[in-house]
Length: 195
Ligand SMILES: Nc1nc2c(ncn2[C@@H]2O[C@H](COP(=O)(O)OP(=O)(O)O)[C@@H](O)[C@H]2O)c(=O)[nH]1
Ligand SMILES: [Mg+2]
Image (cartoon, rainbow, N blue to C red; front, side, top):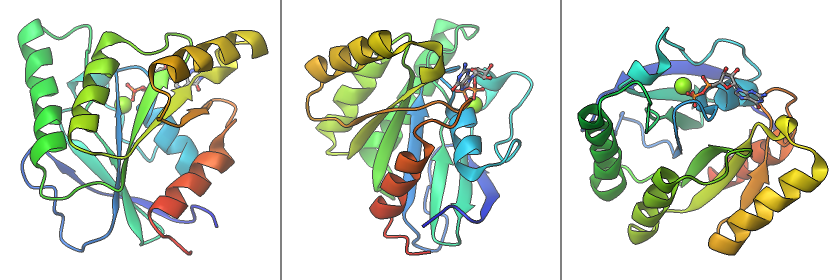
């Protein structure tokens, strides 16, 4: 099983996430700069699949990428963008919370992308609580693993495991592609993709 085909379909700004054909959706959440766009590009083995605006924190749409004609990866706006006013940050967080609580389409799973060197932040913790309250299936992707040595990365993973023993944590590097095979396998399994 592999990711063979990936195409941008559309961007959605809040509201209707039912984009029409009942294909399963996998949601990508994370703080701005954690590497969400890079992870999706690395999964698709494409450098520029994910539209990266000049000012990435300004992206307000949830962007849908159709994979293997079988499911969608959905890149949500990052939260906690440092250049935003607190008002704007609250607005973006509210919109993500709305999706978590009320969306007309429930994703098969939410992949929370974090910078493993930074670990979980309070914003990530808030998001995890909200996801749990609404019974979402959560996976944490500890991206930028290339920045840490073996001992440091194990320490970071065990810190997360202590806090969230039930959530799977996968070490990943969009830069070196470490963890890619496992992440692809997990996603294809969750979406029942047999291609
Ligand atoms: N060293 C390293 N840098 C990364 C990795 N993934 C992303 N980055 C860098 O982190 C920054 C933010 O990445 P981006 O994908 O735009 O993050 P997003 O805001 O979450 O979509 C960029 O400068 C990337 O080159 C990784 O696995 N390793
Ligand atoms: Mg991005």
